[in-house]
Length: 223
Ligand code: 5RP
Image 1 (cartoon, rainbow, N blue to C red):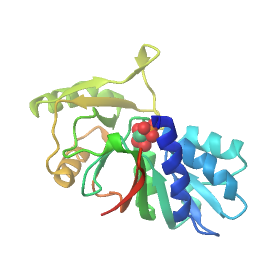
Image 2 (image 1 turned 90 degrees about the horizontal axis):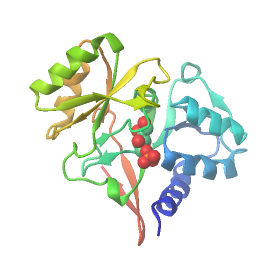
Image 3 (image 1 turned 180 degrees about the horizontal axis):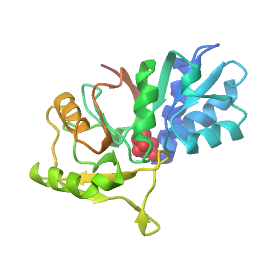
Image 4 (image 1 turned 60 degrees about the vertical axis):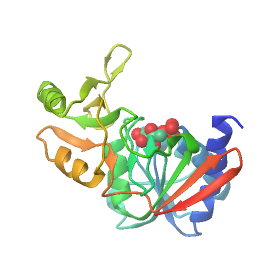
């Protein structure tokens, strides 16, 4: 099975967590795009969605699925999103699609986080994937030095040769060379560095369930 087929498999499987009348939190990325396509088949049954990016909002609206503002909704039953890495406790690295800040906000608003991923995303220790960190541009050089003191190398993410600008008007640092052995402590520490908007470790907003796609089908991990 191709990676694309595995993503479609878990995107479809995530529908079991959507109940009629729910407002659904929707993440960002190629796996979530498969979930959005699947959700379109039950669009008449959902009360709406709260989206984590302009890209997902466009795709939802193009398929006739209503998108509400996060501020219009107090609590979401469920949040469905992908991950760049997930460990055996449901802690994740996210932000490969640069949507980490809004993803964390919508996840925090939701009762349950259902992660959808192919089996290549399951790791023993977080940190193999370059850690995305959304930052205020004026803090970039200072934050690069701060990550260097931890043994990491932080590079500004580029798009078409210039710094990528997120949906929130900020930049992304991708940090390599750091193994994250205590995700809760790491997230708390980096998040309070001046200039950091959001660090892409999702430990305080971890997944409760991961639907992991492999050639033998969908495996359900619960944390
Ligand atoms: C976007 C994310 C994505 O969930 C993550 O990058 C996984 O993406 P994909 O499903 O395309 O592999 O965090 O900011």
